[in-house]
Length: 296
Image (cartoon, helix red, strand yellow):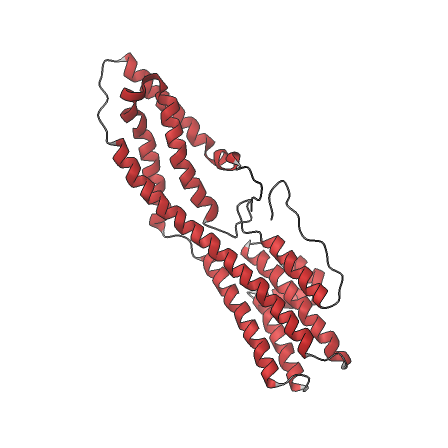
């Protein structure tokens, strides 16, 4: 996620510079052809075309931003639920029982490993190093044996809570409260996986691209009578505005794509790690800082 104050135009310009270059050459060719040969450019309703396309791009951009914001909301819920889980486990499970004292701290570490594993899964990365760092190689192997390693870690934590209940260290009401928190965690994970695995409908992805490129081709023909020799600059600038609308939606549509426009999963997982380690009495790493005005 870009956190700098100044807008980074190059992040939008760089993916579209080839298209802009071709567009400028086309605009220049239309302008030269208009002055070299005695013909009259057809009166195209460019304003009408641009208005309709602008509405279409607006719907597409709003849909992409809704996905991005929903992803951020779900991760906010994950942060709160992780804190609640750690607080409940540390408060309910007594310290006067040696095995239970170590078990509740293990549950806290498992929750940290869980959010890091979920982050890696959403970004299509290998979660094994993060799980091994927090729980050891054996725990990583056991989680990776499942199709969904993050869910495997959550299931294991739930079984540990059930074992603590069977030993009589917490009562059924406390177990139910902890289970409600774990249900919230599972619901948040399900929402994130839905966003990752469900793209925008094909019409939202293909039609705007086609109509934007078509309008960019028609712009110099409709503007050359008015702009004359300034047509290549004016038409290319107008085309860039529409191409930028396409690029903004492409940047936001997948909030877990591990790009500079991504929801800052690494920073949020570090926040969870700090809070949970400190709640369990461990030393915690420092918060993640932006790298070149980008928070990952």
